[in-house]
Length: 85
Image (tube, rainbow, N blue to C red; front, side, top):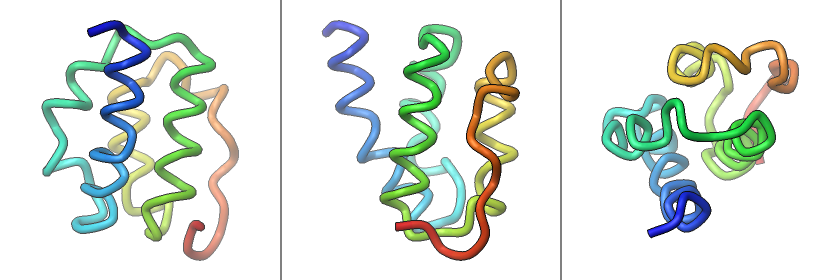
């Protein structure tokens, strides 16, 4: 499986985990698999996908996302207000 395929397969799993729990507990393996492998553009795309598809407040999961992809923190979109989607 290529990295792009892994990323596309992982996006809905990560968004679903956030949707259910407000965190990445249900998809911690997928998050770990992507850690240190994605480009800045891919990390931003993943963040936006989770934000737009989870239906949860960014404040519930943003810190955990940043911890996983800390080198790209400054490139992430500013935290919004209210529910995503």
